[in-house]
Length: 116
Image 1 (cartoon, rainbow, N blue to C red):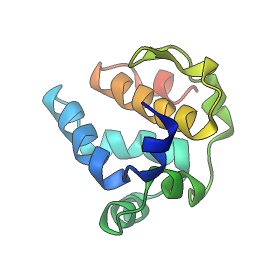
Image 2 (cartoon, helix red, strand yellow; image 1 turned 135 degrees about the vertical axis):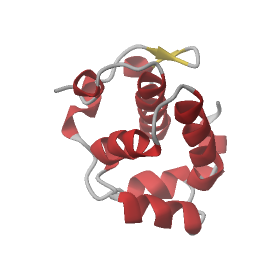
Image 3 (spheres, rainbow, N blue to C red; image 1 turned 45 degrees about the vertical axis):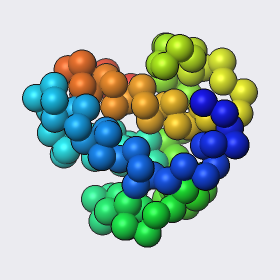
Image 4 (cartoon, rainbow, N blue to C red; image 1 turned 180 degrees about the horizontal axis):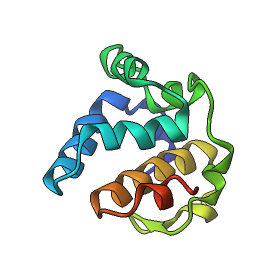
């Protein structure tokens, strides 16, 4: 995915896909919110506001209350990209979020997902 495309894509456009992915694998929106909160610091109201106001992914991460310092511990491949090797900061943050959502959907233990 091109970095230019990421700057204009909205959080509201990918959030429903995240919900579908975790629910299709018998997991909950609460689990999804838990990993988004861990990564970004947004609470449920903040996530809802980000969906409602149509902020771009760049704005979503720029306005994040507190990006988790342990996010750099997220490693592996998602969508063909090794997340720890991505140079563009926005692209890396989006792929971190994708990786966390994927781990929820696969049923990985929450303590492992949250790098505890």
